[in-house]
Every structure is written in C-alpha cells, then in structure tokens.
Length: 142
Image (cartoon, rainbow, N blue to C red):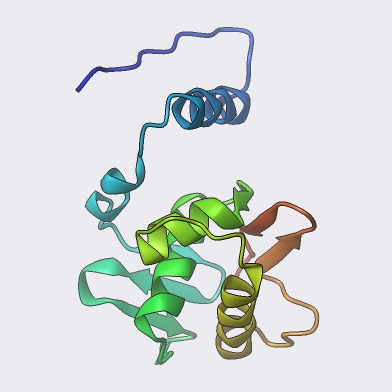
C-alpha cells in the first residue's frame, strides 16, 4: 500500500483534508478500513461515543442505538465538521455498492436524531447539507 504525504504551508487543515479525500475518491481507494481503527472516545456536546463498547451516552445516560445508527453517528463523529456524502456514509455502514437510494440513510438519520437531539426538528448535532449529505457539528456543553 502506498503512502500519501502532503506538505502545505499556505492552506488550512480542512482544505488539505478535503483535497486528500478528493484525490482518494478519484483514485478509487477506500479509506474506510482505517475508520474502525480509531477507537478513542469522542465527546461532542452532551454526547460521549465509546467505540470499543459500541455505546453512546447522553448526559451520562445510555442511548440505545441500532448497529446502523451507531455506525452512522460514529462515522460523522470522527469526521466532525466535515460534510460526508450519502454515498460515503452508505459505503461505510453497509459495506456495499451505493444504489442512489437516499431514503434508507435518511430514515436512519431521522431515527438517530430522535434519540440524540433535544428537538429533532431543529437538530444541533447532525446537520443536513442539501444535495450532498450530512455533517456533525461540535456542540458546546452547558
């Protein structure tokens, strides 16, 4: 497997990361295999994601998620602030060829929002980026 080294002094980390993702997707290289290797706990606002235990806590209380809901949340969390296409999310969660069926992802995100958001109709965590996909925002703890 080859390595990609990027050195840029004039661009932000986000721009560099976006360019890397663009290069990787054009080269038809999958970086999803590395996703499961990131097993550190992730704190986003009131949410604590514990990958090793496949658990999510909100304000210290367990949130019961399905495997698919957990994988969607985890994928968004490790790419915090970055918009992920529905295709990218689909490929990670279902490990298969994307069939342009957005309703499957949309319904899982809707159920996930009901479980983690204070008001699912005005989500703080999972934001929809119209025509592209979803991203998770960093939310300040109160």
